[in-house]
Image (tube, rainbow, N blue to C red; front, side):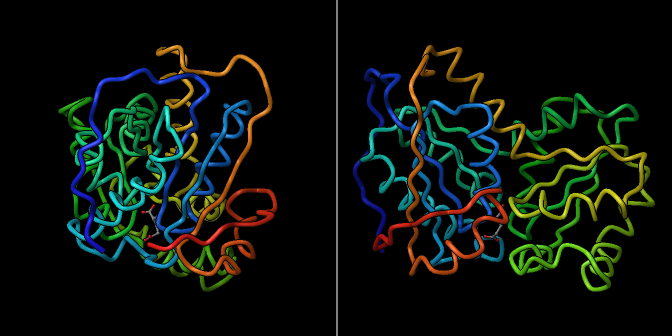
Length: 278
Ligand code: DGL
């Protein structure tokens, strides 16, 4: 599908009663939604999972950017006051294109995760794990270096952790063997902070923490992004002062699997999701 050519960038008021749009390649972004619900319970949240075109982590920057624009075209008509790009792979490659295109603020997961990691490190050695697309983009490395140029940064793609998390294989010989293999060089590098740079990795946090050992602090980009979203809304006086928020779910494939496994990522049942054509 061709992205629309209309530019939406135009100055205008962003009312506090607007919604927060969130998109991801599928279910993974529900970890970010969970974190947003914790800190912004009064907001209306509209989530789009691009399940029909998942995964993004194995695709080119060009394709992920095109998908991202198409996703936001759908969300933008809901009247957004903030867009959260929950997907690390999309944040890594499409954030600039989205920021240039839309008038509402656009928040990705990379910058908040990088900030938290810099605040956490004591020895200046930070590790980053993510999908192939995220690691190949160098986005975390750039964000970290922009904050502190002297950092030593060690990165490692861990693509098999995505299907393991989706299948609920969170510990046991197979996930442990995969995690130990992926993390072996990071363990030797002397890092004291590791960024979980993928929506799915918070589910594997206990296993990753165990493999890395007690000397390594894990930074969850989802939690940091939710904090950054709350701070951004407060700063721009866009946060709702009262009321009860709502959450709606949209997907680009039949919703069955999203509804069935969504609870693992959201920490609560996904009651229903509406399929949209992309
Ligand atoms: N949501 C993706 C990310 O955070 C992981 C799944 C995928 O590859 O699409 O990078």
